[in-house]
Image 1 (tube, helix red, strand yellow):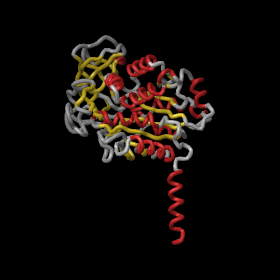
Image 2 (cartoon, one colour):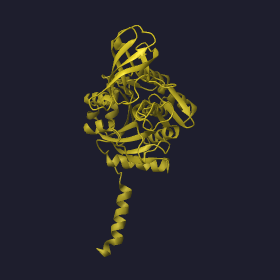
Image 3 (tube, rainbow, N blue to C red):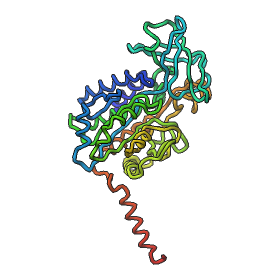
Image 4 (cartoon, rainbow, N blue to C red):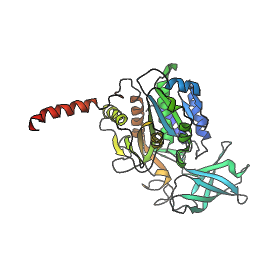
Length: 383
């Protein structure tokens, strides 16, 4: 990862975001795309589509005469957080939480509060109530030093730490790595794919909204029916920042994701991804069923699409103090998420590797089949 890419990553991680409140990420992403002359558009549900400027161009790309599949890279722009509901007093804002969250050590926890105008304020969480299953926050109040102008619904936020992002060696600690790291990977891959203004015939990117409340942005895009009209193959590549698990360890490389909590992914396309990983990142990647959560590859699978996934191992998933570390308020209390720069560089290498034009998408198991036939021939006399 070069300095330009690192700068983009850090700028993304500083942006405030929450489900249905991704506008600051959208603004930054579209500015970066404009600066690099990369075609893009906004779909009818507010997702950022990269690689085409309109529905017509999208359909034209999917109808091109080619045996090469379109690689549709997908990452989400939101992170669990809250929306303002009503003012309870001159400085107290009642909020509703959306997505996963820590469930302990919440009283007095620092939070950031952002307005549509872009201003970010500091506050404290009070009176948090958990959902009936006690798995996440349902409602709370946040207390600000001074009441900002505007109705309660204009404000949103999440947990705050010493800084929006900071570095400790090769680790990045941040308020929200999930899934701004995936957004970064798609933007960096697009910059490379469209270098010197050349069109990229096999690349599409989709930056989605409201993934944390059930893939809402991805579902909205698939429901448009655009992708179902494709006459050439499409491979959806989910880029996620996923809870660290045994054999999916921070700093040991990106994870070739075999599936998530809900389903396994397409075996043919997965074998292509595994070959790319073996070639580009020998002994520097991991393979695992990442069943700590679900991802947008499951949404793609539900809609009948070929889907695979790449994950960055994530410490303190959804700001839950699962691994502890700096600024952690206690076991399952608020804590900054953390990721490893080497893992992110590895994800970039895999994204770029998947765009190569000589990959065996329509013959993923040719090598194995040849070996199996040879094995049968060697043992036939014993049959």
